[in-house]
Amino acid sequence: MPRTLTPALRRAAFAASFLLILSALPASAQDADILHRTVDELAAAINDQVVEWRRDIHANPELGMQEFRTAGLVAEHLESLGIEVATGVGGTGVVGTLRGARPGPVVALRADMDGLPVTELADVPFASQVTTTWQGREVGVMHACGHDNHVAILMGVASILAEMRDDLPGTVKFIFQPAEEGPGGAAPMLADGAFEDPRPDAVFGLHVFPSPAGTIMYRTGGMLASSDGLRIVVRGVQTHGAMPWAGVDPIATAAQIVVGLQTVVSRQVDLTDSPAIVTVGQIEGGNRGNIIPDTVLMIGTIRTLNPDTREMVHERVRRMAQNIAEANGAEAEVTIDLGYPVTVNDPALTRRMVPSLERVAGEGVVIMPPTTGAEDFSYFAEEVPGMFIGLGVGADDPALVHPNHSPYFYADERALPIGVRAMASLAVDFLSSNPISEDR
Image (tube, rainbow, N blue to C red):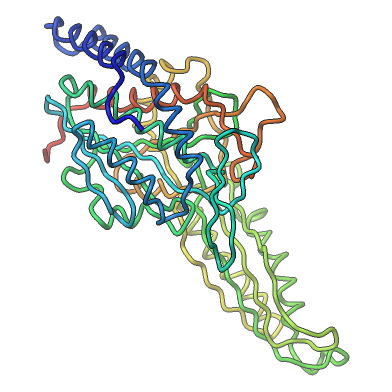
């Protein structure tokens, strides 16, 4: 991997810096236009390298908290740009801090680095051949969710903003996060000081989706769902299957609970305001057809797109399960394991930054429908105002379009320069249009 910028990139950076030096006016539309053109020129100049990074990372995926090679590649690149680097943050995370030459606010940009235990079936020359041991068996490893694109894009953004540092009013923190797919890397990074010294005023993140290549998607408010684990243990009284009246049937009770839980969503949640899902995906109980067991285990997931709805659904799931069990003479022990929170795009920040996206993608900027997948970018956005966007990487050929996590997931690399320009523009525009925080 090259450690320095290409001659073409350096020439473009010099020309852009020269134009900025010539401008003696205070911040204005003219200055913003110069910054935007600089971002665009540098993004075009570095695109081949971004593609090279993406393919290298795609061919060498690593599972969560095992991203040693990827983190090393990232750290080496950031250091080559003269960016302050901290490694091992929250496990295998990397934080780069770029301090602009002018005072200003602080913005954080985040990319996740981990792959999935999926054997790749996509027909690309750089397909992953990596295998590893997962849950006691050998599996393939693949960037089936597209995080290789996220890392390469943010590495490209770091190159651009490092070249523009003399004209940057503020500081950029580059957050390269492990284990988004699990066990979760955002919370450990925050606990390890990723948002300290200095603390960001806002955070931006990006995720690729199999939408038309180059489209940018956003949503104000809840964009991605919370993801909470549901575990219900129904306890009855074991008896002979021929004499059910002599015991308490936890299987019949569990069946009623499954049906009852669906009414929590269909009859107790205002679905015009915020979608919600309660799914029971596993039921275990009994070992013989003529024995009613004493216990049934139910395991599921709860998804919501509003923090208040999340709290309400949890309470009503508990009440529904426990009351149905009590009505049958059984007991229900309900455990809800809190997972990733709702990913909420700060309304004021989102409204302010949409023009930056529209400058990059024009009519390709669309409002994203609510998505019940989850993302631990949510933890960063709970700390400071955040905005999470989607980048379409779907190919023109429908046969190549597959969902995230598919072994056939394919990313059209025409979208990479759009992603680089979008993330760099969000950072530059936020820094240029925001006053210094009072605590700076």
